[in-house]
Image (cartoon, rainbow, N blue to C red; front, side, top):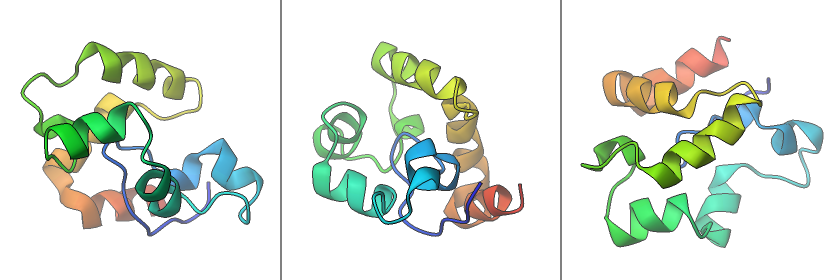
Length: 103
């Protein structure tokens, strides 16, 4: 786990626990660059562009099939994105990041 203070993507991944971010800090700058610049075709565009939400939990159909499929792949990497969404909803961004930084 590496500390990360940047943009929290709509999917609720904590970048400090992402294998790409951990592997090479110069290759991946976290969601701040990856999501905002590349605007991933699935979750980001659906949540931010199409529906105008900051996070998936704000959607009336959360968790949709697209999110569930995406979240399944992250379970193998140690992040439960549905739980992350629930915690974001309850804690808010600042407290959520603080929780992850203390893990």
